[in-house]
Amino acid sequence: MRRRLESLLPAAVLAGFLIAALVVNLLLGSAEDRGLKALKQSVNGEVQAIAASQNQRIANTFAGTAGISGADPTDPYRIVENSPEDLAKLQNIVALLPPTFRSGFYLVDLQGTITQGVRFTAPAIGSHFTWPGYESLVASPAFLKGGGILPVSTGRTTAEPVLAFAIPIFDLLSSPPALKGSFVLESVVATDSDFNKEVGQLSRGDTGRYYVFDSLGSVIASNDVAAIATMLQDPRYLKAGAGLHRFDDELVVLADVPAAGWRVLFRQDVGEFERPLAGPLQSVGRVLIFSLLAAGFALTLLLARRLRAARAEQERLRVLNEAQQEFISIVSHELRTPVAGVLGFLETSLDHWDGMDDEERKAAVSRAVANARRLQAMTRDVLDTQHIEAGRLVQVLEPLDLVAEARVAAAAAFDLDPDRQVEFDLPDSPVWIDGDADRLQQVLANLLDNARKNSPMDAPISLSVRQTGHGAEVAITDSGPGIAEDALERIFEKFVRGRGDSVSGTGLGLYICRQIVNAHNGRIWAEQAPGRGATFRISLPVGAEPAPSADSAPKLS
Image (cartoon, rainbow, N blue to C red; front, side):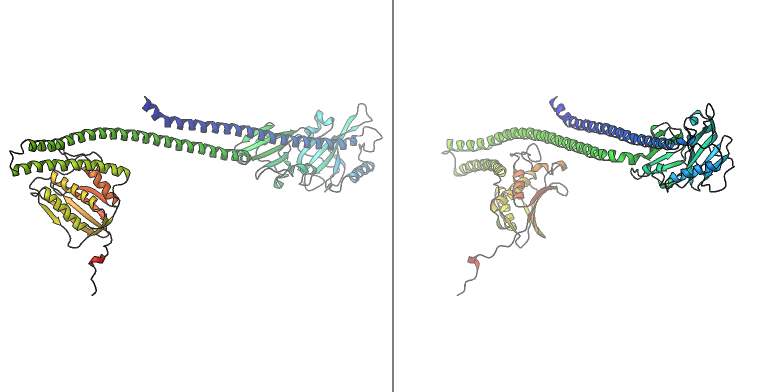
């Protein structure tokens, strides 16, 4: 159960980081939504303020012209007839206007005939006055309360596009006062008009555009100079209600100017509108989420590796414990045999010493010595393993002739088993290496002893030495049963014994051999020999030839 819970720990940690990343994403999304909502409310308020400002501007314009109707019969602006006096009054009005005023104004009677006016670009008095929406405006009750504004069209007093203010004129001598006609004031639609002074200064990004347009969609004012006096192409701007809208990839804000029947429009690409707020939040969100995910994955991998390492360590300790138990069993068993042999042959010799001849005494002592040597070899393996763990296996390296060392090892093997045939393939010249002679003899003796144990009695053992470039190689080949493919590397581990269940030993010999060779900066490995058998190879770096000693130098007489 505990192992299963440990297995779920990395997944739980990763899930926690994923949940944290999701929460951060949701929080940032919520913050972005709130920010965008506030930003939209801000631009909506701005457009509403522009509409209110335009509405006030129009109200002021009507207030300035209200006296033309003449609340008092003696009012000089009570224009009711087509007469020189009326014309003079209109001229007086012109004199009161600023020099930048480029259009004119005129009088229209109830039949729609222009009866008087100033600044006509062509003869107009006596002509019929036509203007989109004029007749419906004059017929509306709102017109009698103060007039109205006509849509943008071609004017009578200038060649530029104009919009027209229509103001009612009453006959105040009648009771009640009767409508006699209208006073029409044309106002140029241009970048320098009063209506464009405020809107033309506005700016919001590269695609943010502000428009003031009439009921037909004609642009009266805009921060887009090219759009002034043109028609808006999208009918949705005329039909949509006031407030925020989204038309395709465009944010749209509309507000009404009730005094004139106009509308104020703001439009901008959604991406650009949201980028100043959404861009930084998204960047921060990506960084945070990426950091959380990266930390989560890193911690998950770390935990997974730690768990694997812990399990591997537990498995290693388990195997080591089993190996130690097996080693104790092996050593106790292996020591029991030579110790019993030593004691047995010595006790037998002591008990029957007087009744034994010299040959029998020598044979008993020799057999006791053989068991003592076997016991010594086991003890050496155990001590060498301790030296390996302490890092004190090989301490001194000196120039050695590898060919000579091979001959010494072969001679020692022959002394132990004179009947065993050893085939040599040795070069005539020395092969110099830097090594520890005792330790290398230990390696060669161990490999030759293994080859002897695993080969039939009548099968020869092969020993070869050769130099290959900057290296030297020793090969020992036997004619035994060979080594399984999956065991070629495993036999160099601790406590792994031989090639069969009948092989004796502590299982430390080849392990010690590898450690000795490694300490010489070399390499040892096993191969399947052609046919049947195994070959153990040792590769060592070549060393420098030793300088002649002083004793061997020629003496001068």
